[in-house]
Amino acid sequence: MKKLLKGSIFLFFITPFFYLHAVDSERQIEVLIESGKQHFNNGKLSQALTAFNRAMGYLREVPKNHPLLKDVEQHIRLTKGKLLVQRYNKNLKKENEIERNGLLPISEESENIEVNQFFGSVLAREVWQNKKITKTGDNLGFGRRVTVLPSAGVELTYINGYKYKIRSVEAASFALSDENVFDFHSGSFSLASLESNSLCLVKSPLSEFHLKSDDPFAVLFAVTTNGGLKIIGLLGEIELVQKNKPTISLRPGQLIFSMPDGFSRKMSVELSTLMVTSKLMTAFEDPPNFYRKLKQQALIQALRTKKRFRTLVGDAKTNSDFQIKVLESE
Image (cartoon, rainbow, N blue to C red; front, side, top):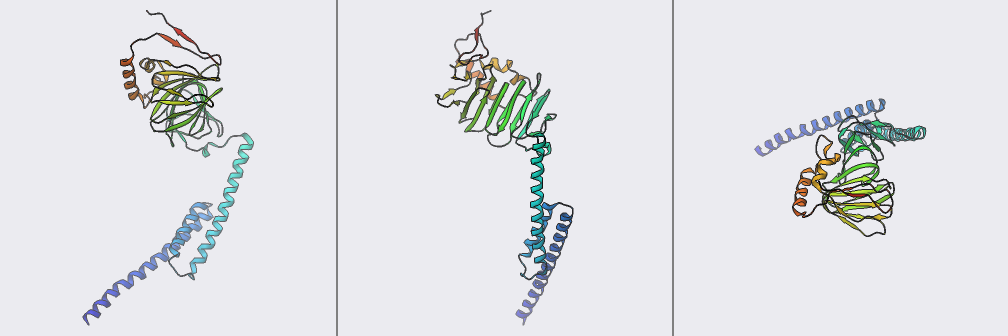
């Protein structure tokens, strides 16, 4: 008798629990359906579909003849249909926008690249409507062409992938084509990545090569008159690979030209001098993220250097040669 009584008491507490749980679920389903209908009527189809799908999640636990099951299934089908039409119209509107002026609205710009620092006038053109960079933390999408006006500069970080950081100053132009493509049209640039195993394509008007690095690296570029690039290694050992040409290895403190006809011979430059003379290093409020390691590299170079020549390495105006001037000692 005692055992039976205990069992009866036990069942007395359990049974109301399941009953209340069922009632609560029923109410939750009704609330979700009502919420979905309101979103649907207000044109918020994604939110409506979310609410109906949540209601369906509860209804999977009930018998197939439940009165609300068909109602929710019908609302899901109807919402999906309208959502498909809405997306089609949105894409059609986007295509018409492109056809009308060739530019997409800024509100639809993707967030691939972040502005870390800037000064002066920096403009973003192409793909989306033109805009002037006005604040740090702003985002740009792949496909943008950036123009840095005189007495201006910008520092950008690629959000994904190798998280490249690029700087540019004074009368420069470059395209943000893709996460692993750098298309420099004019001006000077620094490119760095603190990630390992980097691989990217570097382009100028008349030069193109792949840059490879197993370790974090930093390098300077300057577009030359002949359409090539002046390249100076700052950190890490990088490999420069041109089609049908021998691979070139570039270490910190080494300079080379990428010309339309291939690479030039390598020369050495003093990193400590570069650190205080290059505006890519000095013109911004904050130093580059690799600056501390660059100071260490400059010190190592100074200790190893036995003989110095005061020279100026200038522009490359032809397809096969560049300017170099030896300065007289004071």
